[in-house]
Image (cartoon, rainbow, N blue to C red; front, side):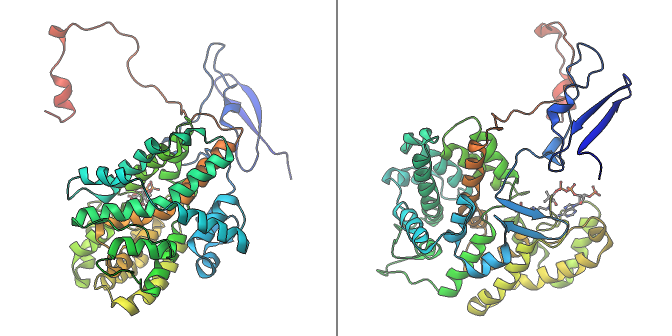
Length: 439
Ligand code: ACO
């Protein structure tokens, strides 16, 4: 085996350089020494959307996209989904090891203790329009938490950081449930701290006049499994938002609001809502080929398919499909399932999808289960945000403790004008907006 270095010859100057290779990467800063002339800034890499750039070193989540492998802290997702509760997995993601019995009891107790929110949060909720999207409400209220906990700016203290962690994980379901109740014009339901994490969430959503809500154990368990599957997914768009915003040393609530906002988008967590809307639009199994034709013509995206990292079946989609059977045994089958299965069958055989290695992702089946469980489509992305909170905090914490990390500040390739002289108003052109298609 040769040396762990890369030799680069700059054909502009004929000079050669040797840069170290570590963990399958070279350091972008090692390229800066490569200059065409004395006053040259030095070579950079250009990588819009980070398609081949590692922005951090991490020990949290491992994905092998070609093999369809997902592990949290080394444990396969299949084993965790089968044997753990969500809060147990959240502990693992945050602290690196599975908790002992007493560690878990303590952890659950502390998170449960922080499920209540300040009464003023209800006033914020009341200010939203009746048809406000719950993710919009979540972005705002998570951000607003920072104003209730000004001590959270002292997050360098590990004890303080842990307290914000309890609060964020504990309060997220409460905020989500309040947003849902607001959209229905129903009174908010306070947390029931006798119930488990997923059970309490269901109670806050659906309790009516009964003194105690008894969630269906199969549905509560299914939701808990779905929470495990969504807990972390390494450097995705929202984790990157959490790290980038947190790198300015803002408080964790503000950084988390940015992560929720990133998740809201239809190319990220918003895709499960889009999947359901797509399935409803297709309407019946026999109309699937017609829809696939539109996808292949580039007129539509097959929502819930494709992934930046997975070029194989998303392992979470497989577990969700199994969970669906258990849920449907209680709720009855979602009629959209038939259309989804037909879409998957045709897509997995079709050259367009095979060539591009497009497989179902986590969002393809999750919406179908959520709908069968009684969640409105608008709530789907919220169901993603609740469990992902533990992942976001873990990514944020890892970034803070990493001595190599600094404020996230990418470079750009400037292609705009060179210096030019100011143009007085009477000489300016009307053409610009017309060319941009605005006028
Ligand atoms: N339907 C049809 N064609 C697709 C799809 C799709 N869902 N996804 C990718 N492609 C095509 C692209 O058009 C492109 O084709 P081309 O090479 O002929 O131009 C090729 O496959 C490669 O796709 P990219 O867009 O370059 O892949 P990228 O890694 O940038 O995008 C993404 C990944 C955003 C997830 C994309 O697959 C997509 O838009 N999927 C639908 C939305 C979705 O389900 N998002 C949820 C992702 S999971 C999550 O965030 C939790």
